Image (tube, rainbow, N blue to C red; front, top):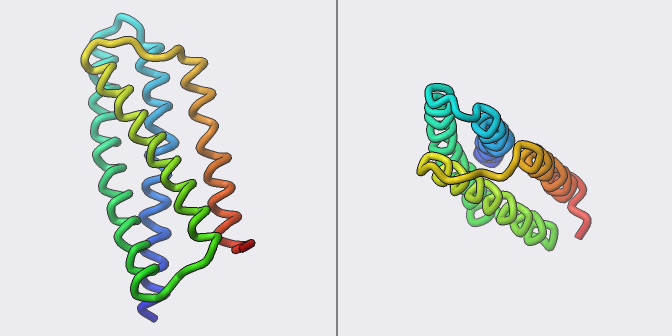
Length: 139
């Protein structure tokens, strides 16, 4: 029963983190499109900053429960190494979005809205690969 509870909590926090991974770049698109409206930009940047902090907390909890699954319950395999590599890519993407947010809040320029929209779609493909690795455990 402890295994199922730990796995359920890991999945819950992964879902919460992924929500932030998907939504933060969308807020950045809205920041770019807000243009010279300082009140709108300030509100969006506040939302993004809070979401980014929430995302860090959710990643931390997902990491903690994933670590318990690995160390205590002995989850292993080649698929796990591939999954962790893709999770590291996703984390780098999340941190990159946080740096874009910091740049925006400091008055720096962001990539175009179109570029941000394209980058917003890439994590879906990475998540699909992660899900496949977890479900199929191909190696």
